[in-house]
Length: 206
Image (cartoon, rainbow, N blue to C red; front, top):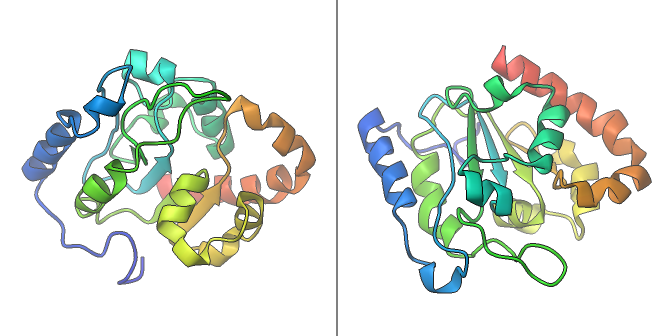
């Protein structure tokens, strides 16, 4: 990645990263706002080549403690063309949500990721992953945070223009089954975007 990209920081030793991961898992900054309780969920190592930045754990992930352990995760793995063993191997892939804890249910789905997490922890985490070559930005929260003013006015437009953000970032819609209607309306996504995504992921993890 370029010097101003996500992992320009100097590499830290393994032990401090383990300590950082433990600090995140012990975090209680949002405890008062989380009616379902605090349970930060992520997976990463200094060797991770691909970083997947999603939204926040859903209820099933909150209950099992396993990132992307739901239908959305199944869809995402299908998009990437990889199996669970590869997906959960932190030597290859880091799973870092915008909000580490389940935010709770809202009227039409889960609440947004807590806004405290990314500013508090992401830069510190990414500093320990100098081998990262590609960051998948899954959903609008991740795209707005990392792409800033270069993000388009809609998620659809941002994903359509994914090549503008390569080689560092690859924007994607959220793989929730709720987005099946979006997928049906936007056939170009499966034909063009997923083809490019699978090729890049396969080459990266080879």
